[in-house]
Image (cartoon, rainbow, N blue to C red; front, side, top):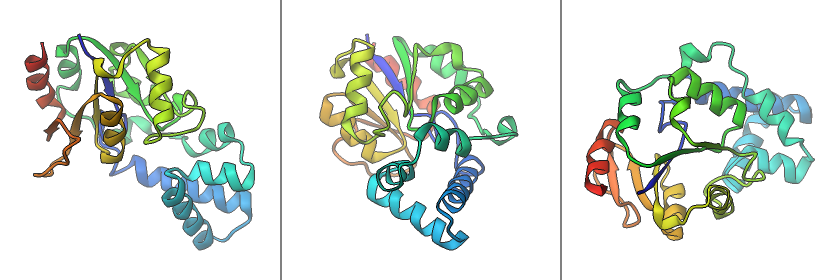
Length: 211
């Protein structure tokens, strides 16, 4: 029986309209305030670190000694999270149809991930919520976090199915030996993608094939 590993943002919910813009503004404000930069310089530095390291936090830690716990706490505050989260109809039913264990694997902090799962009303369906803190602040697509997740949950990669919107993360998953599901509306997928689905509902079909 497989273990299903799910990304959180833009996989289990649609983060693009409200969540990601809020995060970007919060991270720019954090860089501005803690490095004494103007708004434009802070935004440019945030994006440069994101391009270089895959996460703004890594650049701040490496070059400015930023405390990761403080950064994550300050940049992932959502006073109106319930209004901002957009979920697909029938999500809970879809997840319950999938045989095997279920794990969330996110580059977000644990307090935010658990809050989103509460809003989605699906937190009880997961055996583990594995976040940036658990990867020792080495986010996906770095294989290090994947390996820590496998070790903690006593899993072999070949036992796992990774469901993601990010091709970079799926590439790592496939290289380690996982099956891969790309949540995308694209018509063509790279060789390292085993299945492409346009919605979470389509996972029921994949799950039935693998039983």
